[in-house]
Amino acid sequence: MINHIQDRVMLNNGIEMPGFGLGVYKVEDGETVINAVKLALEHGYRSIDTASFYNNEAGVGKGIKKSGVPRKDIFVTSKVWNDQQGYDSTLQACEETLKKLDMDYLDLYLIHWPVKGLYKETWRAMEKLYKNGRVRAIGVSNFHIHHLQNLLNDCEVTPVINQVEYHPHLTQVNLKTFCEEHKIVLEAWSPLKRGKLLSETTLKHIGGKYEKTVAQVILRWDIQNNVITIPKSVHEHRIKENADVFNFSLTEEEMQEINSLNRDERAGTNPDSFD
Image (cartoon, rainbow, N blue to C red; front, side, top):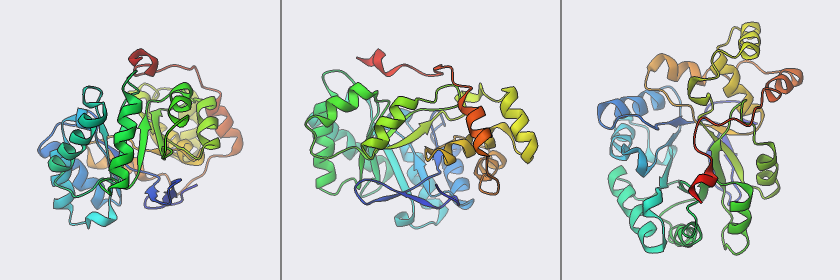
């Protein structure tokens, strides 16, 4: 478990990744995303998660440069989108992403969704990018157990990460167990269920005990579950507040209370809808 915003998690290929970061889904390119990235880095964040689909990679790259934090100290993730999948097109997509970010390499490159009939060819391209040093680690996003099993049957490189929708209404216990058994780290997108958890009574009650917000309670729950988390915000006070989760701990009883909120309920798309 991480104990500081810059603490890192060891991935299965020996690369270390910060256990806490900034997500930029639906953050407008240009000054909005530049400022969000710059502010996050100023407040100690060292992991930034973007994707070609977000259309803000150029702004992310500029925000990183403007921050003054050395590139080697920042962990940058991007993802190959559905219409870019396939062997040759994935190789090309990665080069386009690097060009937009104005970087020589990515720290982590993910398959954004498991597109049926394509994701295994996409993974072959990811393995080539990894072996060639264009990316330091490769992983997947939104993969169910059956997608992972299919990939693991004949892949040369095991994914380091599975980034999925994960929050107290969608605890994905079986998937988390499977990933742990295969040394694949789970990473949470939409940890706050797109804001829909902020009125949850149990979480408000626990937050009141520690003088913490519901968002902080959820992000602390992620950390104590050894799940990497990447909350999104463009507001400085929220960026700071989201990261202020290392000065309290949830009890085992409180962790179980939060676990019991599970409804197997998604805010986003079920990955099987892409099959």
